Image (cartoon, rainbow, N blue to C red; front, side):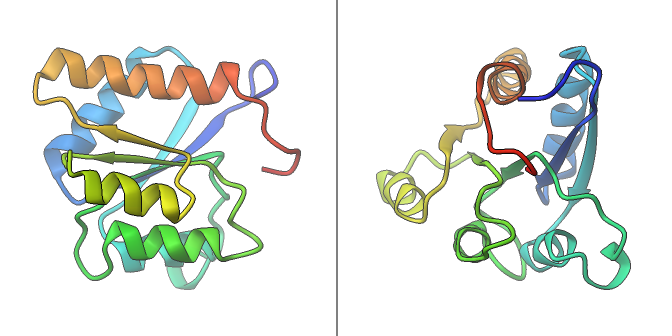
Length: 147
């Protein structure tokens, strides 16, 4: 996906400070050059992606890690808005959530999520899953130019 040495921009949409800390730590351990920006609710996520208000200078991410259960606007609504926006719809969205509900899995794929990952409860497994997500989306996948 990225040219060697290019910084990978990741937007983490997560309201749980513990999960934010663990995700940042896992991404740091993965030893890939990344810049992780974090927003804590769905309204803030859309403002960031649309570069509104305090996010006017934000860089569009190469990858979005999106929790489903968010305050203000939940992840399903955020996903629907991203995938219906001509300027955002090609950004890969990885659902990273505690939900294992078949209804959530179906709903998010119907909204064109790129993948659905349930957060492992075990700390070591959580760290490994986040590293694998980044590794796959950064080193394996080909994305269109300009993303």
